[in-house]
Image (cartoon, rainbow, N blue to C red; front, side, top):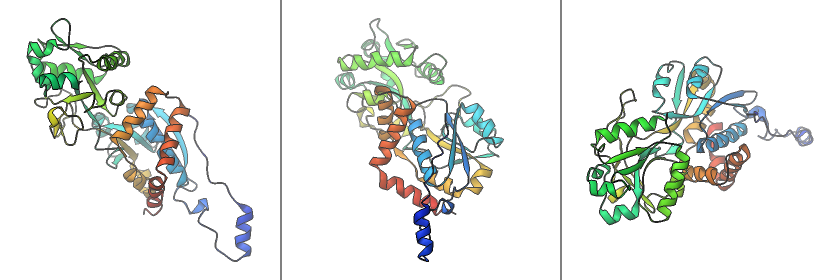
Length: 347
């Protein structure tokens, strides 16, 4: 992608007037900014979503701090290698703990900064339509052991669970948990092109028909089918993950809107995850303003869901993404400006 190198325009006439008047120059001078004369090399993940909107907002903030921004796109494996070697300064949308093994291999050179861009973190789990959940008192995924309950979600007597694309790691989680929860005899996992499968699932729920699926939030799916209104999250009976996946502290997540039966905390398929910013340690030591910006720049999960929904409905071109970022800044100018001021004073 083309670097966004815009900086504040210089005002020579005003500057001359200030000098002639014997007054100090106003604080508009870019030399006074923490990023003055510096280029920051950012690598965003190659998986497009609401994270790209976040990244554009961060780019705008960094430019306000005086940095010139060089933006590239690469997968997680390449990012860890490039950042550890000093070829990239930071990645603002690294999914952790999913990519923790890759990070641990280079953590002497890299650091995780902040709590993540999603306030409350991201969640993954199983959902069914609220109409069926309320009518049959379904409040946990393992109730699908009952053939009568399972038959509600499939024409052949087995529940049809909409899963993930072949090759996606979430598919491995689903297959493992279906076995671990004793659901193999009553649940059939449907794997295919997720976007197409979920398009039909959304239509089913809108027609008032039963539906069972796996998803995550933030996601466009939760913009189309709102938890607590159209669908409910089904808690799992216990925590169980495939071998080789990073261990989790707990899958119990507090405050999950739309958890079946009003359960709180809600036991999800996985623990909380987030888009974390990973920074080269040498760069971090020399740029405290960047550290402070990353620590304060965060958004509610609902904001992320709305971004995902907009990208799905309107489009996901560079122009579409940039507009979402600009719209958020315009609607939250005071908050955005506050981030800049805090970052300017970082030491």
